[in-house]
Image (cartoon, rainbow, N blue to C red):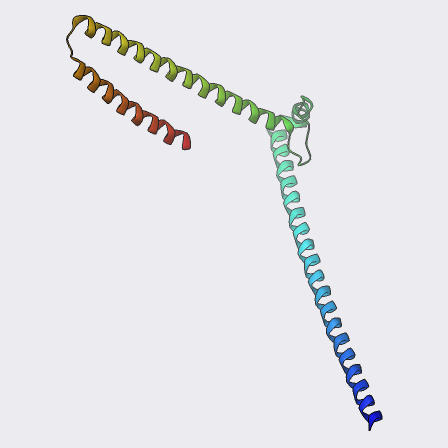
Length: 171
């Protein structure tokens, strides 16, 4: 009886091991299929990228042919490339990027000029206001209450202007 129990237990253990092996084999197969899918996706992605590169190359060739037809020829294209416009990793000319930087610099200078003009205008207005205030004091036309009221109004206007400037900067 003990021998039969021992054999039964051994058989159960063997069945468990076989079952585990089958399951682990299934997992490996799943992993393999997942890896194959990833490789397929990578392959498709690289194919797509190659197609895009070919298309871009064809466009470049067409442009060169058109420039030849117009009479420019390839010499002009090569001359332009030699003028310090090296190609970077992506194949674009570095010179194009430098031109972009120049444009950015120009825009920054222009905005700085605009800010300077605005600053001058506000200083001019401030001086004009002070001059008018001094004239009123000399003439003795307005009372203290009127002066305080005018200052309050000016403060409100300043707040509105500051708010508009902040909103403009956000845009």
